[in-house]
Amino acid sequence: MWLHILKKDLRLHWPYVAAVLALKIASAGIILQMGIFAQPLQMLLPHALIDLAFSGVAGLAIILVVQSDPVVSNNDDWLIRPIRRSDLALDKIAFAALVTLLPTFVFDLGVGLMHGLDALPAIGASAYTALVVFICVGLPALAVGTITASWPQAAGIVFVIFLAWIAGFIVTNGEMTDLGNWPVQLALLAILVIAGTLILYLQYGRRNTATSRGVFAVATICAIAVMFTPKIAGYVIQRVIDDGKVATTSPIRLSFDDQSKADVIGKAQQFMGPVIYVPLKVAVDPNRIVTINNVVLSIASGDGRP
Image 1 (spheres, rainbow, N blue to C red):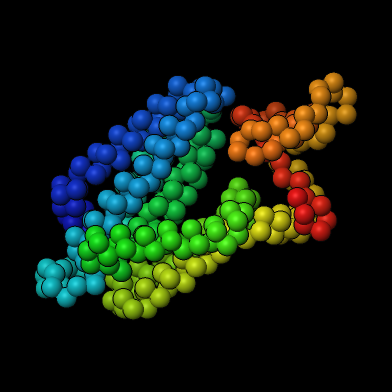
Image 2: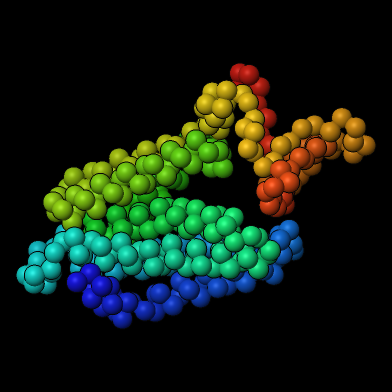
């Protein structure tokens, strides 16, 4: 039954699916044009904008598909016809995977293989990236769609989230946490997975919209709080867990190059802020494939000051 519903959703919303695929093709084309060392650098901004558009269009498509059989309304065919709620939920989840997880995996895998990566590392990296995109785009869109009955309601929720993010940005003077820090990433992914799964269960299993909206609000607050946590917190957590040791399986190791004749440049204006260039030794595991475009180091003293 869920496949029948999925076919119906694809027929009705194929323009959005086509737009998602077109954006992904454009993104892959830019990556191939930049080459393995991300040159020319002026292509980075268009690539970032296309990725942002991909996330926006995919999220919009998922919300509209979920709202085509709105859970919060009492006047819909799926409540009258013999359609199981589990089939309806599975259809919406499958559609979200089709517009987020599948194209990301396929195109990233193709780009990796064209850049010369071995099949297994390329498959693993593409699968991880695709899963992260599904969690960060697909699950939130599914949650928004299930707790709203119309596009204006969904747009209102997204706008409120944006205002909350702006408030956090103002309160912290724009000092966001390092989203590349793995404890921060893990916390954000955990919030999205737990909240998304709970909301889908409450809506399709219990049709408890009030509780679902409460869960969504709490998850939003927690996610924004994590995003604006002081940077030093993530590094302290990582240092405590790693016990200050570099993992032996790390593909990249950095150390200061005392023998280098390169000059240290202080306060060079680049990347929207002051940068200090220092000579480094880069040791790469010969059994791993690593691409290095640039390295950003955050150095903090023992009291947490940068």
